[in-house]
Amino acid sequence: MGLKLLKAYEHFRLGTGRANELKQTWWKRLEEAVVKAEQHIIQMEPRASRSFESAAAGILMTKCS
Image (cartoon, rainbow, N blue to C red; front, side, top):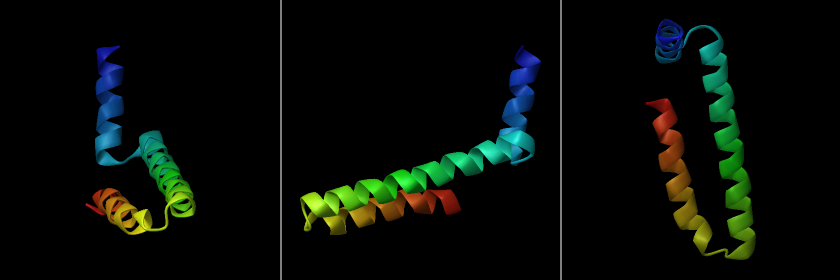
């Protein structure tokens, strides 16, 4: 069990195999959730959209680093 977990972690860290697909899927879902949340916030309170855009940009920038 420990060896399987270690191998899965290595694949995730190195971005190889099925782990890379899962990582890409996770980021895609996160981006979609951010867009949906931003649209909801803009509808509820237009002034809040600017601060939300800054927060969303910070989250998505972590993806690039």
